[in-house]
Length: 346
Image (tube, rainbow, N blue to C red; front, side, top):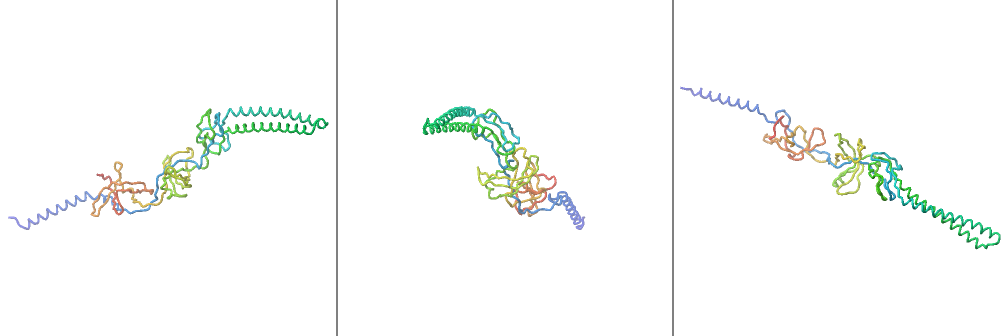
């Protein structure tokens, strides 16, 4: 026969054993946020510079065009892309064969007029001699003087016409309008050209970063606004906006930024750039609280009851070291915990 006291002792021993097993199991599977002892953080909005990506191109303050001034044939162009030229340097020559014929024709007219002038001058001298000896009347002398003057005027007119044609022919020289580097010189020798046709394009002024801004940014930026640009080797350069052009074309506003360290060897190179469009409110977290799986970013959110959930978020660089900006997925006031090392995302 069993005693009631012995039965009660056995039940208590079994209960204590089960409780001990439960504690061991809980110790082996702690909450993910407590594995490395990282403190939870509460999301709060902070102020960040509103960097906005824009189109950027290495350029110069201005570009000068060496254009044809007369019609004709480009017989020579002695510069190539990349050459450095000085202001006033002759870089090519245009020839209009008709000008040569016109110059010859006016030269012949000048020679004929000179012969007529010489004849009129001789006639004037003979008439003056006879007038002085009482043979001719004064009216005859005045007539000879007028004829000589008219002949001399014809000589001067023919020579001026010839000089005008030669001056036009002299405009066939293609002259560099400024000192700089040749950007474009792609018209081959022997090509027919017309007045105003560009022969070569030359840089003018210092190197700048030419920006194309959306017109919505026109009222948010001004001279002195910060600009940053990423070069091809991955380094980042900073500068300031120097000029904002007061015109909109195709929904874009053109601006120039001064950035020290730009490589001026290739004018026209496109670079990745961003401009400070003003402060904005953002959710910024340490990047250690964000994990990435298969190209998707996740954070671990702790609820009020202590449970955790893994939430996909959209992130972007914040501009501060070791931090990320969260664009969507969580809101201000949410509590984030650091993900467990090697934890899987379901």
